[in-house]
Length: 336
Image (cartoon, rainbow, N blue to C red; front, side):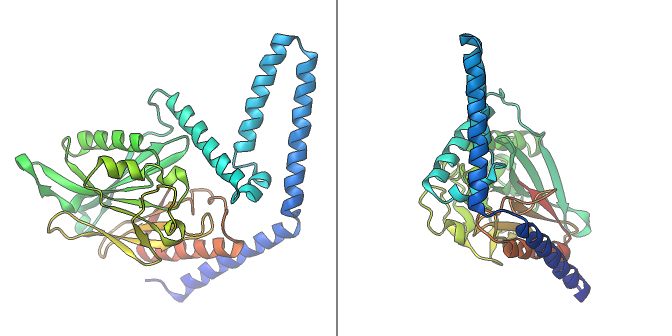
C-alpha cells in the first residue's frame, strides 16, 4: 500500500524537477533567438564546406560536397537539433520533417538485410502462486524503437486439432512487416507453431508515426484484431489513417479475452507532455507478483521523450503519476 510518505516523495520529486526546469529557463535564450543562432551556425558551416569544395579538385570536391550535404541534412533532421525543430513542430515544415525522417529510417532499416538493433527478449510476469500469467515479447523496430507483444498465458483455448491458442495484444505497432515477422517467429519458437497466437487488440501510446504507422495494415491483414486503442486527446481527430477506433481516458481499461476465459485487463494512464494525449498502459492484476508499464516516449531508462506538446509542470506531473502507479503495483517500465 502507498503511505503518506510515498506521496511526499512523489511531491518532492515534482518540486525538484520544477526547480531544475526554472533554473534552466532563467539562463536560456528565448526560443526565437536560439533558432536564429542555430540557423546562423548551420549557414556558416555550409559556407565553410562550400569554400573547401571550391578549393579542392573537381572530383574530390564533389565527393566532399555530397558527404557534407548528407551530414548537414542528417543534423537538420535529427531531433537533437531542437532550437530549429521546436518552432517548426506544429507547422507544415514539421510535417515535411516527419515525412523525411520516416523515409530515412525506413531506408536505413532496409539496408540491414534483416538485422535488428536489439536481440528479441521475452519476460514473463507471474500471477498468484508463481504461475505464469503474461509473457511480454519485445520487437525491435526501425533504428531505435520497440513494439511489444503481450501474450495472455492464462487464456489458452483449444482450437482445431487440439492445438492451444492464446490471446495477445500488440503495443506500438511501428512497422507492420517487422511485427508480422516477429509474430510468426514467436508462434513457432514459444507457442507451438502457426495459429497459436490470436491478436485481438492494438495499443498505441501516442500519435507519432514511429509508434502507430503499422496499425491500419495489421488490422487489414489480421481479421481477429477488431480494437485499436489510443489516448483520446491524440487520436480524437485521426485524419492520418492511424486506425484507432477506441479512445481512452485516464483510468479506462482494455479487456482482452478468448471465449469464456477471464479477461486480461490493461489500464490506461494519461501521461501528457511528449504529446498532449500520450497514454501509458499498465499491465497488472490482483495477486500478481509482477506488473509492467508500457511507457512509450513518456519515460525511458535514462530520461524521457522530448516535451513537444507540454510544459515542465506537465512533465513533472506525468513522472509523479507513473511513480505512484508503479509503486502501488510494483510495476517495471517498458520504454519504447
